[in-house]
Length: 291
Image (cartoon, rainbow, N blue to C red):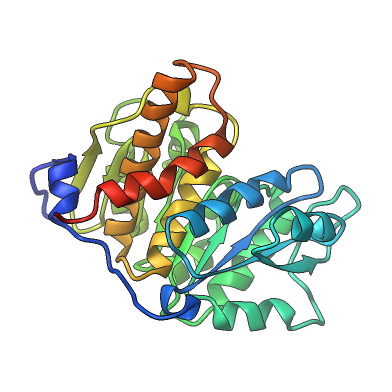
C-alpha cells in the first residue's frame, strides 16, 4: 500500500467528483438487497433500505426474519420483502432447502448485510450465503453484527476482499483489528489495509490502495441509535446507482454528516432521530451535484 495525502471531504472536492446520473427507469439506478432484521430489530432494515432509496437507488428488497416480514412490507411499501427462516429467538438465518435468497442475490446490484442482526450463528450463515452465492461482481456493504463475525471467518474475508465496504463504529473497528479498545484515528486505514476493503469509520474513509478522506461535517449527535444503519444504506444506494466503492463511501459519509449538522441547527445538538437523517439526504446530495 502506497500512502497518499489525506483529503478533506469538502463540497468543492465532492462537486468535482460527480456521482453517476443514470437515465431511464428504476432498473437503471440499480437494486439494493438489505439482509438483516431480527424479530426484535426490524427497524434497522427499514432505516438502511429507505436511506438507499433516498440517495437514488431504483429498487429495494429486504430479507428479514419471517415473523416481521409482513409488518416491514407494510411499513416500507416501496420494498419487496423476503421472509427468512428464524431461530426460536427471532434471529434470521439462510434458507437450507429454498433458493429464494439465491434468486434475490442474483438480481441485486449491491447487498447490504448486518442491519438488525443480533446473534452470531445466524449472521454467519447469512454472510456466507451472500459471500459465496452472490456473483463475484456484486459489491457488498457490511455493517453491525456482520462485522462482529467477519474477523474469524477466513472464507468470507477472502470472498469479499476487493468488493466490499465496511462501516464499523469505533468499537467494531477495534474488534476487527483484534484490539482491546478503540484507540487512535487511523482505524479506518488499518481496517482497509488488513481486509482489502473500503472502510468508513468515525468520519474517515480509507481505500486499500492507500487513499484516505476525512469528513468536514458531523458532530456528537450522529452517535444515536440507527445512525449507522442509515450510513450503510446510503453507501449501498450510491453503489447501486453506479458509484465506485470509495466514491460511494465518501459521498455517504459527507451526506450523513451534513444531514446531522442540519438537524443539529434545527432540532438541537442532541436529540435528533436516525429516521430524520434519511429525509435530509436527497436535498444534501442535490446540493453536491457538480456545478
